Structures are given as structure tokens and as C-alpha cells.
Length: 300
Image (tube, rainbow, N blue to C red; front, top):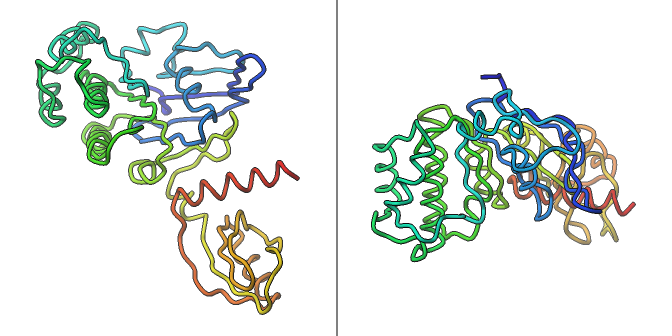
């Protein structure tokens, strides 16, 4: 196994006139939970399809376990557990039949572990797939992805549309599979609080480009939030070093910033501006600030 389970270099993809991915570079280390975040249409699912070998790169290179997933599907897919956002399960099967059908494709299927997961997810062997709720389908799909103990899990919006209890089940299963066995997880999600809860590293995609890719703790430490008070009401927020986004009016404003804290504090002091409060923004607040900063730059 390579040091990085997934290596993506200069990956680009177009669908007609739409640029879905543009010169993407990304490395996913072994044994980590890697969260891929971005707005709808940012390119998350397209990237995952390249990792799975469902799409061939128009430009660039994708390697999984050092292999080309398009040229060697058995060598790659046999070592991946995959849960799609659509939860595609054969509608004519029961849970029991689904187990037996899927087991035939994976020599390393662990029936004891599968049964343990079935009990944890509260699924009944005689249940028919068409009768399953959305949450039950998500649990069943995750069970199938986990039961052959793959070294890599690729999950596309695993919590999408699910109630909090089911989301917790899925997150707990993700955490457990990494902690217990040191597997690697690559997952996309728009639920930033959950990404922050389970991820070791993250990447933010914006319009097919990597806006930020870093260990999560570094992302959180490098951003900070200030509430400031100016001596006089401000008609608009002044341009300040490191300020990504701001909200407020008059004298009091809240700022989300990235790095360069000493320079920013010096600028505020020169303006006789008082710092009322300092804090750490959440990943969701950082994501929103980054998106607004990009929008503002594009408008200019």
C-alpha cells in the first residue's frame, strides 16, 4: 500500500460546456477520515466517481492503492466499500437475499461482522427493500459497504435526508471502522457540523477547484472570529488584513479572519477600534466566510 491511499493529480473534467473539475490535486493518507465539502454542483460527486473508476479522467491522473481504477477495476473496487447518495439497492430482494447476493462478490465478507452491524442498525432479515424507509436503506447500504472490511470507504453524502438518530448511527459506524481497524474514509457532505465531528482532514471544493485542503485542526486554528467596536459608526466595513467576511452595522461588527492576526490587530488599534470579543469559528462559519470571500473576489 502506498503512503497515500488516493492520489489525484491535475484532474479536470467537463460535461459539455460545464467545467465540473479543474486541475484538482488531492492526496488522502492511509488511516484518516477525509471530509470533502462544497456547495451543490461544486464537483464532489464527480470526484468520487473518478476515484471509483466510474469516470475516466479527461485530463490528469487518479490512483487508488497505486492503481488506475479505470484500468484495473477488480484490483481497486474489491478493496473499496461504497455508499452512493441514491442508496441504490435491488428492489426485489429481502435483507437476507441482499446479504447473500453481495457476499458473492467479496471473498473477505465477514458474516459475523455483518450480523453485528445488522443488529446495531436494527434491520430484520425478512424485510423487503421496497418497504425500507430512507434511513433503513442508508443503514443497509452502509452495512454492505462495511461487511467485507474494505481498507477504503467512499461515501457520497451518507447522512443526506436522514433524521438525527440515523445520522448518529452512520457517523458512529464511520468512527468505529477507523478507530478499530485503521481504515481510510473519504466522504462528501454538506453537513459541516458532522464533517467537523469526524474528519481528520478536509478539502473545500468550489466550482470544480480545490479552495482549501488541510488537516482539520490546522484549518480551525488558522481562523478566528472577532467582535469589534469602532469609535464612530461605519457606513461600510473597511478593508482589513486577513478579514474574510463581516456582518454588522454602525459601530459594532463581527469578523471571521484567516491568519495575519498581529497585522489585523495593529490596523484595528490604528483606527482606535476596540476588540470586544474573540472566539473560534466553527467549520461551517469558516466555510461560509471562504465562500463569501471568493464571491467578493469574483465580483471585483
